Length: 493
Ligand code: GLU
Image (cartoon, rainbow, N blue to C red):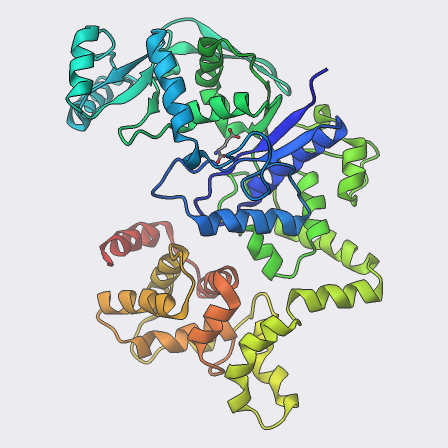
């Protein structure tokens, strides 16, 4: 019997998402339950959005939770490299194979032609899809244009009628009509593969037997299945996991709920509780108990117990569960956990230089700097009354700064200042107009240590969270304002 092999294949394009940890957990449980292997592959073919920092954050966040992989870019293994950007030559070879077999073709259409086609199809109320313009070019012409170095992509051929039956471990057979599938680009003009080609080739070469992925990928499953058929490979068992949702049932999004694992770490959640909560997303123990460890979950794991109703990721429920875990720690474990969280020398060393000059005794540290050891800070709304700006302008200023900080990749004081500067300049204001608001939102007080240093030390998760809370405190942002201010944001350098 072949060994079960599962994987997580995150794209390192932002904060490490709780959804990644959720899918990783279920893949890990499934593999362990069958005595198999769980591996990690980095899907970084989007060269513009992928970063090494984000990749490192994914490793750190999963490890913090207690999720370990037996093969991956950072631990090696027999099927490497495990980073798609290092596997370019492999995809070139398989793309050429598909073209040779007549399952794919070179497409030389310009962006202008494709835009025009799209516009016409939209106009005629048709689903926009490639019209096959380059599908039947004579081989000699293709060779000539390739030799001349003309930019091109490789597209896969897809049937135009009938249905594709997707065998899903949870839903049974799902029928998806072929006419919903476009002639997917497999290789881009830059010579790099798209998700579809790279994912299929790698899952095959890495011996993956079961793919548990988010259900947002279900509509595109036919393209993957067809690729397996074109190559003549056995396809893995497919399992489309229900998506995590906000309490209002919409897809989990950072607008409504913090989605970064690092946020939960900085808020002082226990990794065991977090993992336990993720394990309860759409799944339950046979005896319905709410609190369980990873080992217990593995022991009782049964993929058929996953229910398809959208699991709700609810901060209050998570906090409750975390409280259960907290109270069952021994006092020693509790103290050690707190120490590791923020009462450690690394963190104190970051804070000390900003506090030392402002106190006369150690006993004044806590009153001055307690906000470094808090999640939210509950400032008084009166702190946001502004000499120069109306209440609406205050909210607008803070929202614009928040958006700029949400897009900031390098979390350093100069960059943070740059964000605030860019917004105030655009609004024809001064830095000193914004700083009292920042003080109030971040520290909860009218004055404290330098707020820019504080933001750097607190990190992106807590800083953004506090700004969001302050904006909520002031009445939030209406849909109309959201739209108008987003336009403003786009104009800010
Ligand atoms: N790179 C994809 C992602 O970021 C992988 C999806 C899959 O599991 O196939 O979610």
